[in-house]
Image (cartoon, rainbow over all chains, first blue to last red; front, side, top):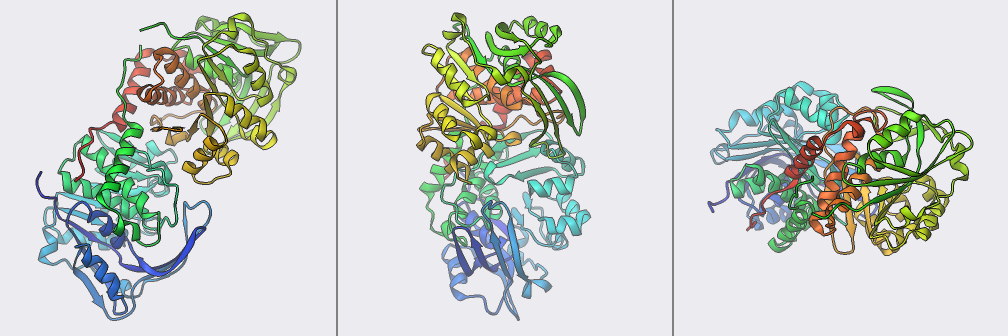
Length: 309
Length: 309
């Protein structure tokens, strides 16, 4: 097997304060780039481009570095680190944002160094689509670009979100986002519509129901890994992205088998992320446990097809 | 291959009036036993035990008979046939019941003849759990019993619903019903709890997200077949039951491969049912189309698992 391709993530590194029915955490490590990186690093090299303030704790920086995550693109700007405060109710599907302090993030423009421009795999985490497009201007012929977004940008800059969708290889959305952007209630139709609008491939994240991949030729689906000890759903989507892109970077297989296994790796990493606050479980988990969850998912859906009639 | 085992369904035969965002139908054939039978008959012999009134249209009776469905257990009682009137809004997840006229159904007690008691496969469709238990008293050592229920009975007779769950081989519930009966929000925990309460196996129907099978040893999941032309979701669950039990009756394989393929057959038959009002599509569909949908589902989830690390 060839060595895994290097992954670049451009997104947020934040301090989160979160309350869920299962506990609370105060000013813990958060942000899309943090979850992605701690997930993807299990599969291959990861470089972060993001910004933090002068108050960003040295222990968080150390934790990235202990895991071998490249922080050469983590800018420190004058001011305070991006902060998010939210809570989840019993349904756990949706975060209720209590407070967002953009702080240093408000004037962030991603600056890629030469070590970033040639990364073959790129994750454009959920940031302003204009910033995502700035990143696309700076990278040089990446093999695979995955993007994420959120309702906030779909409501405010739908055209720019669609422009990103057209220019990446795979666009991640959750069900609500897919429906909103496509203007279709039925998911299969929403996926069709996004392809009609120029997306090459979409993944619709379905929370506890797994995730659906769709391109012009194929559809693939993974169930969610059955988590019994959910504590905090924050970061599930970015951890999914880390497992998905991670397996593609590691295996180099973007055929049907590769995409299916990438979906299973994605939902596995998401299942780990939500079992604790911050990316803690992603830091602690070992290869055996990741393998075991992917095996469970494979076993849940795979069968030998017999002729029906 | 051995001939398929005979299936018995005890449930309702009704006249439905339904309005959805995609159209409306007035006094069309409905009822759990009707959907189940028109679905299961593609896989093997089906006998119905149910009741209709003197006004039940001869054309509906003829349609069952043309498909080879055994109506020797379809009682005609003095009075009017059970009627249901409902509508679905844009979300299509949930029917809003406008009117239920039980009519002859209000005094129905299932009476099984000798030709019914020895059926190896039994579907206890959604009726009063006390009636479901009456059926279980009358059957002789069936090989496989599947049950369905609904929120109405879970709210009114939870103990009797649980008693049915304990006495059948597989209990069908939708997500809301599973959560309500188990008193757990998280689906994996709800399934655990139902097994703790004595169920041997449960299937949690998840609408457009497919269905989950769970017993003490195993979990299996099928995605939903991606329907683009939904017209009326009525009968999806009973059509699912017909495909699921149908494949088990036909293949005689209740191992992992058999259960997975049965889930795929279930969601395939459900996908057909919802493409038109009444069980019309189930009547018209041919074997090729059923096979093709099961193949699509198999292709969506099956992959060759590579070692991760």
